Image 1 (spheres, one colour):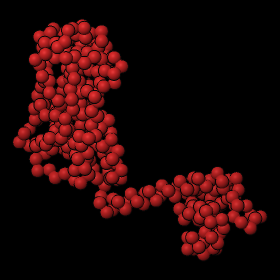
Image 2 (cartoon, one colour; image 1 turned 90 degrees about the vertical axis):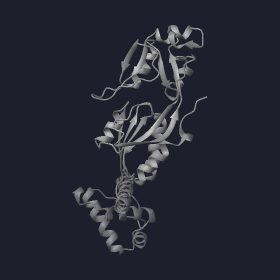
Image 3 (cartoon, helix red, strand yellow; image 1 turned 120 degrees about the vertical axis):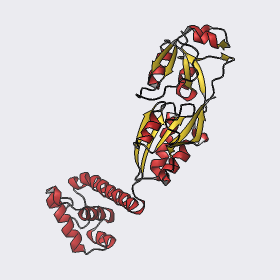
Image 4 (tube, helix red, strand yellow; image 1 turned 45 degrees about the vertical axis):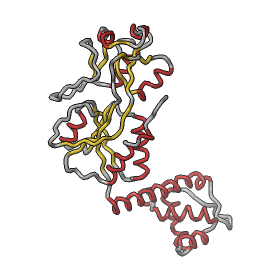
Length: 303
């Protein structure tokens, strides 16, 4: 019987409760009072409960009516939300945003950007991939993603088919655990001394991709394909490595990691780029996401 419940019946039920009478509900909904009475009777029949007391002049809810009223309001609210969403789709279509984000990109900043995008484009559908090295640009070339946030010093997969645009930067720091030998080495530490210890390096695990290594001090390397795993190995004291400051700021604050001062060895900031196919026209939703991602005011800058 519940399949026979209509949104108009629920509107009549809520209107009677809000106005305090059947006549008031009729005026509010601009319907005949008999139509309101019929809607309430049909609703009670479908629910197999009485919603209003029958021995009072004023519309007074029964216990069942009190219990069901919040549900009725919720159904009406969701229906209005659905209508608004459908209207937005009819007016502007349902934006599709498919983007690959390098694992080094500030995650908190990314989440803030997605919150803002969701609020501004209610019907947007997001396809988000977290990648490393050349993985993002491969997804763009394969048309799995329209955009990729990549690191500038990672070689381009196909410069003839792809174009890059500057997005933002993030500071890099060299770190190790407090128990690691480098933590007690007098600073600043020369590159040769770093080379005597195991360095934890993130590498691409995609087959056929060009390998690149930046900021490597020597041959003693442990390779991982996940930034979270690198952080865990560093905290465990199994090696040293370069990390984006925004990812280790808490570890530095609580002493799980220490920052190492380098001597005569510069490791620059991470420069993030937007990669897209040449000639690809970004939608308004994609343009807004790029604008948000590249907003330097939103990227954490722990001092």
